[in-house]
Length: 459
Ligand code: HEM
Image 1: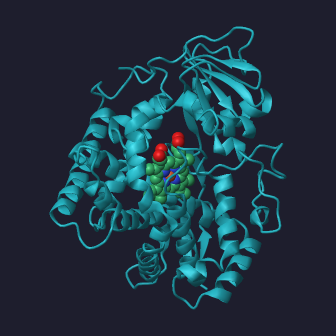
Image 2 (image 1 turned 60 degrees about the horizontal axis):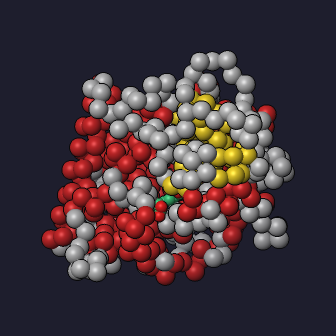
Image 3 (image 1 turned 180 degrees about the horizontal axis):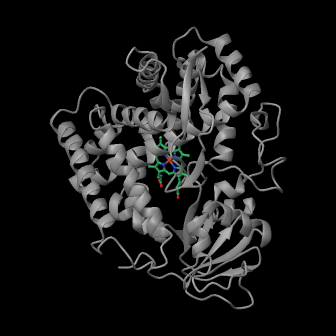
C-alpha cells in the first residue's frame, strides 16, 4: 500500500483553488523539505486562505480561514477522514489507537477513554504531576548537576514521559525513559523525512538503513509497551488508571480488548501525551527567557501564590498569568503545528471545489500568525489572553483543535504544564545560553531543533 493511496493527482479545473507558481517538476516539495513552516506562511500570505500546493503529482489544499477550518472540523467533520498520508504513516506504528482509528472503533475507544480525562479525574493526578515537578526542581540543584547548563527540551521530554507512565499506566518508566524518548524521537524524524520525500512510494518496507533503524525502534517500543500491559494485567494496582479502564472495558458481547488493541492505545498515549506537552513547555521556557518583562510579572504572580512547593489544585486557579503565558507560547509555537483531513466526498470551501479524495491541511502555526486575526502576530504578548480581552475569533486559535476529534488530553496537558512552569520558575530563572540558535523544526510535533540549552540560576 502507498501512503498516498486514493489521493487526488490533478485538480486544475476552473473551480479549483489558486496555487503558488512553481516551475519545479516536483512542485512545492523541495520548498516543503527545506522549510515547511515558511512555505505554508508564504502560501497563505501570497495566495490566500485556500491555496493548492503540489508534491510531485499530488495536490493538497492549505486552508487558513478560521471559520472554514472550524466548519471542516466541526459541522462538516463527517465528510472528512484521517486517511491522509501523514496518518497512514503514523498508523504503521500506532496501529488503530485513538489518534489514528476511525468510525465505530474510534467511537468505542473514545467512550472508554473519556472518563479518564474528565476534570475531576485529572485532579486526582495532580499529586503525581506535583511530585515529578518538585523532583526535577530538586535535581537541578543537586551536587551532581549543580546548576549546570541543561537542555530544557530533553528535560521536559523525560519528565513528561515519567508523568505519562505513572498517571496513565501506573508504571515507572524512568529507567526506560531515555530509550523510549530516543526511539520515539528517531521514529518521528523518519516520518518527517518520508513526508517530505519526492518519492512518496518509498515506504518502510524498503530496507534502507534508516528504515531498518526505525523497525528496531518500533520493536523496542513494542517491548516496553507489552511489558507495561502484562504487568498491569497481572497486578492492576489500586489506582483507576487509563490502562486499567481499557483492560476492564467490555463490548456488548462481554469481550475485552485484544493485547494488540491495548498496545496501540498505550503507544498512542505515550506519543500523543508526552512529546506535545514537552514541546509546549520547552517553548514556554524559551519565550519567557526572551522576554524579561513577562518573566518578572510571572515571577511576581508565583511569589504571591506559592510558598516554594508545587501548586495545589486550588492554587492553580490563582495563576491566571501563568496560564496566559502558556497559551501565548502555544500560539507562536503550537506543538501540533498542522493537522490533515481527507475529503471522503466532494466539498466546497470558500467557493472552490474540493474533490473527493482531496487532502486539506489546516495549520495552527499559520492560523495563529494570521495577520487578519492577530495584532502584531509575531510578537509575544500573554495579555492577548487576559480576562478583559475578547477571545480570539472562532477557529483562529486551535492548539488542541476542535470538534469530535479534538485532543482528549487538553485539560491533562494544561494542568501538567502550569504545574511544571510554576514549580520551576518559582525557584529558578532559566537563561538561554548566548549563541545557542533555537530553530523550530516541524516534525510530527513542532520541536526545537538541537534542543534549548539553558543555564539554571536560583532566584
Ligand atoms: C500541549 C499538549 C498537547 C497538544 C498541543 C495536543 C494537541 C492535539 C491535537 C491538535 C490533536 C488533534 C489531532 C488531529 O485530529 O489531527 C490531538 C489529539 C489527541 N491527543 Fe493531544 N495534545 C496535547 C497533549 C495530549 C496529552 C497530554 C494526551 C494524553 C495524555 C493527548 C492525547 C491525545 C489523543 C489520544 C488524541 C486523539 C484524540 C481522538 O482523535 O479522539 N494529547 N492532540
